[in-house]
Image (cartoon, rainbow, N blue to C red; front, side, top):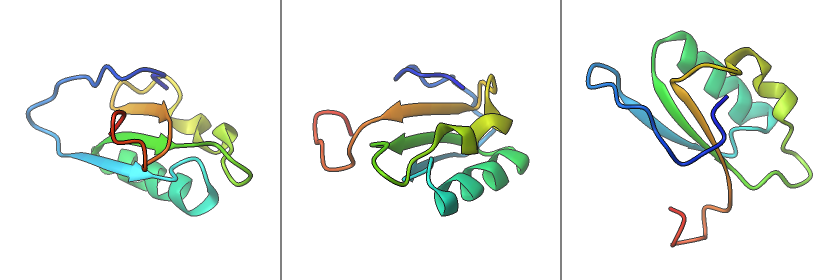
Amino acid sequence: MTLSNDIPASPSAPTWLVTGGAGFIGGNFVLEAAARGVRVVNLDVLTYAGNLDTLAAVDGDPAHVFVQGDIGDRALV
């Protein structure tokens, strides 16, 4: 899992922004997207429901970028 804002370039794969991607539903959505070859930028503030263990299967996958932050943060998004 990449913990940065550097998103690897891949012109052949779509890129999706997933918010809440470390929670139960979002995490499973991220895993399914990764299995289908979709590049994912995963944005999660990691409050009570966020758990990075949910994303263990995409750890080290260059097509998955995790960004800890809030969707309401205009400067970040």
